[in-house]
Length: 285
Ligand code: UTP
Image (cartoon, rainbow, N blue to C red; front, side, top):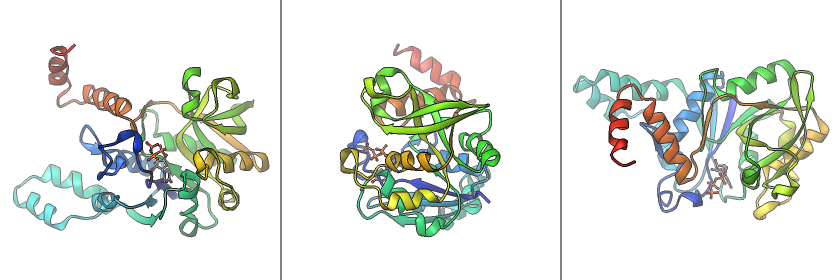
């Protein structure tokens, strides 16, 4: 039943300029794969194989990345580079990706609403690919899915953040309900003193389709954007909504420091060159 997932990727990536002037933020590379590929692989691991990307101007590279490149495949085959051929062709053959253009970047809530004609009246996932989550205990989306299967309700991925960082995130109000964490409200980027908890939303969601109806009437909020958090707060008043504190390493790769950290940490875990990287880094520390 739950197979559809939306990747909003139409944002301007201003925190990462000038890199993102002509290159989509989602195509920035962690070790040897673009961020968006990590997100898609995570979704596939959770059984969500019907994918829609919300894109905008300057995001064509995303479409090319998930397309079949016949010429490249031909060249790799002729050169006998079978391992690399398998690597690049497997994903594009395994996935069907649809694309919807968000004509103006009016906010994350608006980007999600652009997927409504494609999703229809079904529950669906939403994943923000610039939040990179690596988990050895089932992908982040699979962790959310497990709670969705139990409850049939909307489920939100969470992480604890230092009090000094709450102003960077959507922060939830939560209460324990048996072994589940029931969410009763959320606020976008609150001041430290207004934050209802230290639990931040980290770009992984499963929603019931009621969210779309609420988004349709959500007025512009913080920053003049249609905020997903505002519609979610209404949804949490109408229907049960649960939170999952995601197990795994998380990197906010949508800014240069988080991105560099992700590259170094995953580089140091890479079997092929971790030792060399460690040796090289020692010269600079
Ligand atoms: P972010 O605020 O993290 O991304 O939005 P951004 O807007 O690209 O980056 P900055 O803040 O300017 O540096 C969260 C997610 O929502 C998408 C972004 O692509 C990102 O995946 N988004 C945001 C849209 O698709 N459309 C929008 O209008 C805004």
